[in-house]
Length: 620
Picture 1 (cartoon, one colour):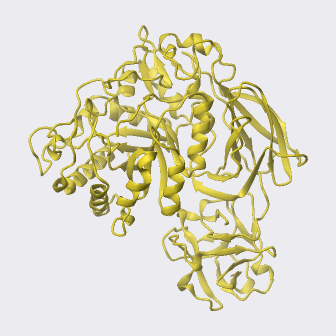
Picture 2 (tube, helix red, strand yellow; picture 1 turned 180 degrees about the vertical axis):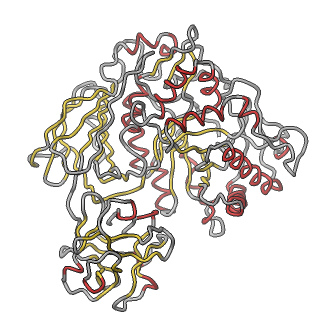
Picture 3 (cartoon, helix red, strand yellow; picture 1 turned 90 degrees about the vertical axis):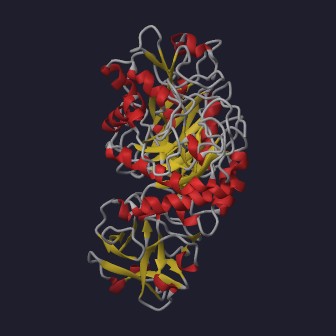
């Protein structure tokens, strides 16, 4: 469908010379204070979020921005008392976060390529450096061109009909410095994940026989699957792993003036199956396949058409754009398909209202926030979209290409990206109120609670953040986003709740064969919602399933001792403690995925506690 496309990017930080950003300190034990960072909107008249003046003279607007990822005085942790504004339950955990990022589409790459090597390095570090930059952990690229490009539109096999893909080549991506830029970004942040989206298949696969307009011809679905697989392999051959791809950018919209293609839900269903086969047969089975990649408003109905019984295993998630509808659509899809990720893959936001929109994405189960277009110049170039692009997070000077400004929105998005690390899990908090503060909170893999609090109002807002029996109190300035880092925050061991225990590789603790016999083995298995994966956390410290208790075999604390199901007897071999580092402990040892392996059927054991991922578990 036609969307209003505010195009831009996100974020912002400083002007011309980017300031060194203070890195969040890793948390290894419970803290006595909480770290605080603030970023705000500009207070300069005419430089409100999204205003076009940001292109003409960014420095003027930045002069009125009071906080730019500014570290504040640490807050003392005190005993809980009074009324808490935000109560975080670190034991109630939801989705695991893939990351936060933006795009390195060809317009941004073109502007980066016009810089000196030193300036280009500085700009890339501002984006993806986890210590001295915003720490973007996910980058989106395009397979072929989008509307944001400096030159002619192209795919990887233009020309006459070519079912064998004999002309296939990503040479244009190499010539346009896309490959070189991605390599440089990976050198700065080797953990960076890259996913791809195509705006159009080669024209000869479409009803229009043109890169603009038309629909996918169904008979070419197997060929398109091969085309995508070859693109992934070609990038891999250049030293650039592709974490995943969306099957088609905005499959319900056929733009009249830039590349696009209509693809029905049933066609995506067929394409997902064909592509999964291509990837599996070519050693690329770990590559993620995400369907849809379009507006919230049509997401649920489209997902239902793709995730049929025969295709469900081929799809890893449903991707969304925020140009129509509400983020609650992601919760709807998650409820229908809890084994699939939901991801927000395109929409740039501005100011504290934009920060609150990101809060809503994550509170509706998104594992990702991804902006769109990272840097245009002061002339809003280059691009071939017929609209007027809104401000991008970085704006390049037209008089000196080595000069660029990072707008306030860079800082605001960095309040998420710099501190919420990949692998974090969202934890339970109340949303709050737009008339005071709103929030979302996460538990990082190192045990740090990261609470992002948003004040959209025109006045300062006081609030209390409570975890268990402790709390901190802060006053967040008007039109400001605050990030609060609380090392070792712990709500205590949860009791009385029933559900899955998830852990290494995203798998579930499972009673093998659903046997209730004493000694039944406990394993790691793909989460499926059966009774064999439903555990109740009891007040006596036991973990119960199928009427029995999780037990350390023989009450031995030796490394490698297996865990089993056994009649509940209240012994220490059945008493488990949830530690702040995510481990489950009994007899002084930690529940461990043997090997470590996340393969179905991995038998669980106890082992000396190491803090490794194979010893981190999430209780119901």
